[in-house]
Length: 120
Ligand code: SF4
Image 1 (cartoon, protein in one colour):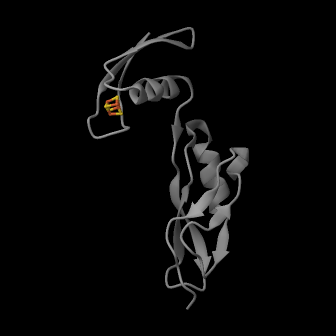
Image 2 (cartoon, helix red, strand yellow; image 1 turned 135 degrees about the vertical axis):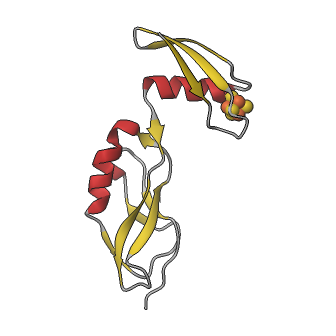
């Protein structure tokens, strides 16, 4: 099977052609640097994404706090991760980078605050 992808690692946006056979990447072409091949292999075998969302917060100027995973988590875990995050409620004050959920769903990746929010 041949898959066509666009590398999203930088603004160049190289068009990648990936040959996949029996769940294995046989070849990658069209990439201008090694990061493109790495991206293509990851995207075809086990795609991952950064999760950005919000959690509920009390005692702050807003009712929700933006949060982000420190790195990518498996794409097939995103819905479960969203469900887990929906249960979280934090208390102000919060500083940007504070860990909101450690080792989210056993991924080894922390969910952290994407901004600070003072107590009111
Ligand atoms: S392959 Fe390299 S140059 Fe091309 S878009 Fe990806 S990171 Fe950028």
